[in-house]
Image (cartoon, rainbow, N blue to C red; front, side, top):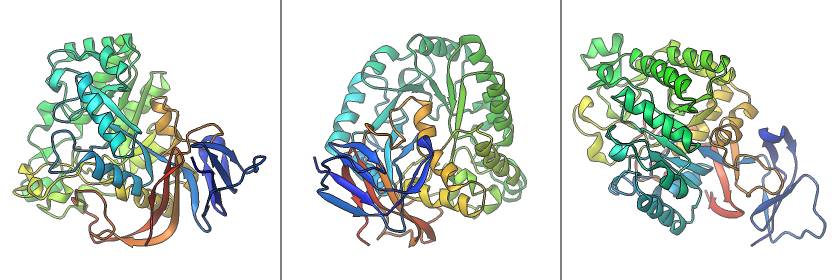
Length: 427
């Protein structure tokens, strides 16, 4: 493999408390050194990172690749290309593919396809129950053996707390964390936006924040009962942040993440009946958005994810409640995170940490830092480069984003995965 020197860049590696202008030396797909030149090192490739940031590749905790089963929306190849263009070098895959990730053969299919696409760092979550129907537990042992790093309910709300309890006990026995998107289905069913003045004004079916907070509270009680490590995904409201922080203060093994768009948009930003703003959980109030940002600062929320969900055009046609929720969000992850820095909500080092070492630590992934001996998973980006979201700059098969044709700041120039350059911006 090529020996690579990245020079003249500002290296930010929060895991190692590095923020300096330093060279990075790579050989055999691994980080050899940051700063000091190794003996007898002659670079085959030199990347000039002048006026750019060099940091660990991003670790995204929720990415739908749409394969298998939804190839009209995207494929493992198209969406991993989007991930590479976004600086994401490791991604976690929820189990709601078709077929569901509840058998080893599905895991093997995904891994083979990812290898063929030249993007092996795909980490599947196993289905908590067979077919995600909430009735019969999946074979967690076999799925872990094949490489699943956690069990998850995806977007299927658990409807039977006894089965959820048994699933959590089974997960504990196999040392698997539970990834749960908290939702009390009896309160949220049929809703498409946050319960509040906007929903009332336009007569749209709504989802109260209580649907999330009640589910969090129930799961926390079961975590106490079973000892299960729980990761709450895509938290959206103040009440949930408060309950998670309290549980952490009491020593429960609980973590949580937030989707990047929830940190910027609220229900008042919605363009009425525009399906690009249809997401689950829905965009909530300004107070909720403020609480989410504060949760990142006080560490009750440990990671920012894209919650990438590409859709085809048909999925977003029709009345808002009838359209499919989700945003194609990989390629806006970096610029929207940098916007938090520009708004003084986070320092640049804090922001990068929420995309790198912190999400990696949640699932004990050997990723997210530039320590010598680590895989050379690296993102190089220009924090000042403006670009327009359009068909010429977009890589995902899904264009369902509220940021379409908007100008954003912050663009990836190079992405390396195990020392291989998997993306290079030629614009």
